[in-house]
Length: 292
Image 1 (cartoon, rainbow, N blue to C red):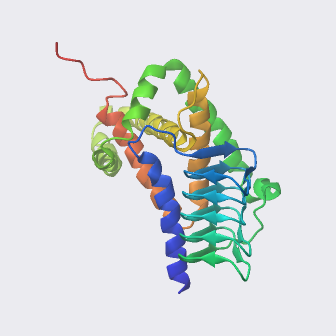
Image 2 (tube, rainbow, N blue to C red; image 1 turned 135 degrees about the vertical axis):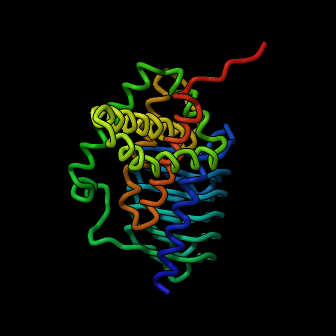
């Protein structure tokens, strides 16, 4: 039974993450980062709620899903969809209603006697408390440093090749399975290609350049995918700084995937393959010439 609950939790997380690949260019719902969000008793949110590094308190009604990373969810009103907390707890009060499933990954689902959760309930607890005050000891220092470094390098890409990055990030939402196939094929051929190069002296000399080029290509693809994820979660933002906000949100989301048991790594590998496939399929973000 416990395995069933873990599977449900992972599936919900996966669905909410991969939903960002939707081709719909509209706003993805209510979004907040670094702050708490409260739905008042007489208030109704007609879309999903996504919060990073903040808590969500629902006294009113939410017609969509609720997804929180590094924060807790308190439900005193009603949620028509699923509720997911990654590195946080879900608490449903006496009058709280969840019409979908409730899953806490590295947290707990807590219910009061009068609460209603119509779907499945799953808790995948970790060996530590996951309040925001515990984020630093929770995430290894190396992971935080990596997040900062890779975000900085990705931001450089936005500066030196903004048009190509924009084209690739917009293309990520389309032909996902085609791009996944191209990307996974490239990863599978990586080692055989090195073996082939090692046959000759000239090939041996080229191996370091081949590896560096492959890693750079994969990094560019992951950057484009992070921007896409960030845009789908936050919705369309205005201003020149919007791509950097998309990149930040996407980077945070990708950085927490390894902490999700089993499925987190599977989703990460899927995302990495799609990103690499996008770069190769779009020729590093070069639009096809129009025939006049």
